Length: 525
Image 1 (cartoon, rainbow, N blue to C red):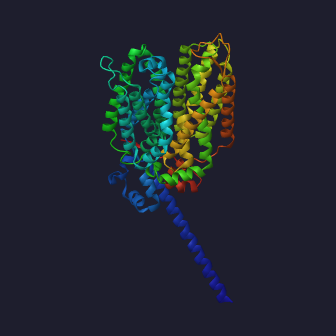
Image 2: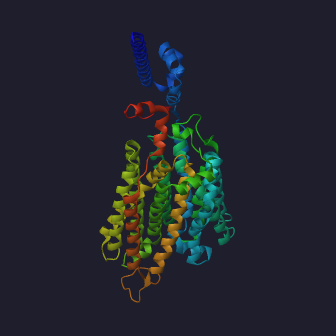
Image 3: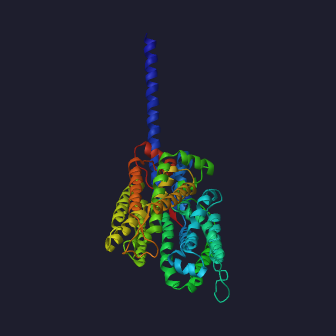
């Protein structure tokens, strides 16, 4: 009996010793974490320099395998030449947009010079939509497989060849430019559009740290509507007579040649030597085919694809039919052009503010839901006031607010699509949304034109052709906008998977202790 008690006492002492050892180990682990967190305050560039750290701390960091990811994160660098890549993409996007809308603001003069109908002139713009949809799948594969550099340079050359093709033989004193030659140039430029317009999200992910991605995406994306604004201003200013059309095409061809040279020379790699963030290091972790399969199974992404694609379609339809809608109530073409300009300018301003806010707050979902709701209210207001006479101020304000709240969601929605679908490639996520927007654009435009009814008598009309009533069309458009906004606001929920992936490898031990991980450090070199 006494021996049993002795054995029991021995076991208790052994357990106490084990507990003491465990406590010592835990204290040592805490000390190591504290020392590593102290290292986190050191300049990330100097982390690899052994002369800047004390030998005990350096030994613990090197010997601690769980902290290898922390050491890697502290080496994340951003390079100043990322701004050059962003500048090239902005210029290229703007140039392609000006080629797209070259003839629309001067349709009558273009038809007279090229000796074709207005419907033929409209096809010079519509060809962009027709070409981009089937080409989009190839572009997403190209961006995710062949890389950003190859895609951008190919797009810049196609854009340049398209612009140059349109002026082959343009000087009127030599010979006439046939319509077929101009259409060929438009097709080449249309081939370049997906290569350019899919790129902002990919470029922002590969070159910019997490606190600058939304801003970079916003700048690159808003260059496209800026190009549309430039075309609306420059084309009427230059081509005030049919004989000036060749000089108009030359004015757009010269910048495209310079931008092509700049892209070919300055973009030396698809990505920087070292990634700016953890997600950039693991970009394209899924193959193109597997990525598309994952997207189609992702409920949050599919809801975003549907709702935001509808929004893109509504904005395209609005821009296309604005002049035809306003002229029925006696508004002039100049006023319609002003409303279109306000729509774009305020949209760019709104996108700038929202991009900066989201970069700092990371509130993607809340920002988009609020802006979509306000944009829908502005769209409903426009649908009502555009049917009234002599409401210039109200129409202008509605167009401005529609652009301010609606346009601003585009770059943020592109970033959100990556967040909810990570690790699928950025080009695939942006590409499918672009395709959705194009399909909705064609559908909405055709539906609204079908619902518009001819007016037997319209004395107030300033339209050059038969006037049409757009009352039913505008109410239907407002209904679609309301439906998809409510659908998105109520049912869209997702995690920010890319942000979580950037934090998990390095700060997992902090979350285990219930603390919030700090933002990763980036060094500008």
